[in-house]
Image 1 (cartoon, rainbow, N blue to C red):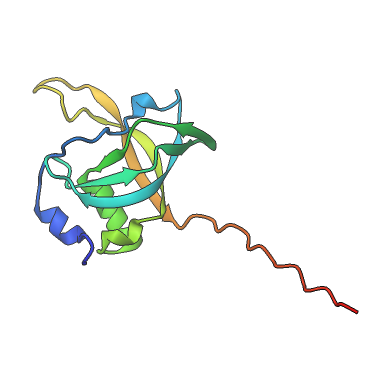
Image 2: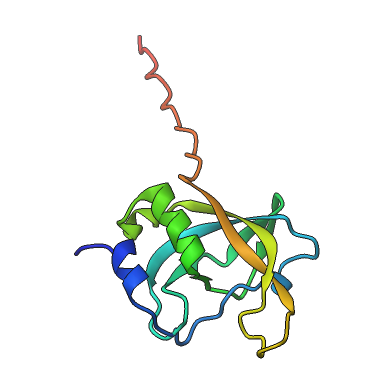
Length: 145
């Protein structure tokens, strides 16, 4: 089964259903770096964002483990472009990876015309494979005799 293509997602726009999105306001105050474990990257069925990253509910905020009710992060075009640059066109390659996010003020996408309010936006800065658990070495067989 082929993975999701970043190029195809750049060409489509849709809306998402039934997901709890991670918001900056739900993170501990002052969080500067977030690490999330990717379960899947998929086209968003009904969102203005072209894709959605499904994540584990255990996230890392500035080195501290936090549990969240959120199950997804919508990917805007800038973050989709960053992910495409980091891992390539086949976004299924992101499954199992750790995505690292920083934050910056951005214009509020839900603001009314003339409203210049800002919100903290997610900026994808890196994608890494998770650290491997150390291999357990089997004890050498003991000599009998």
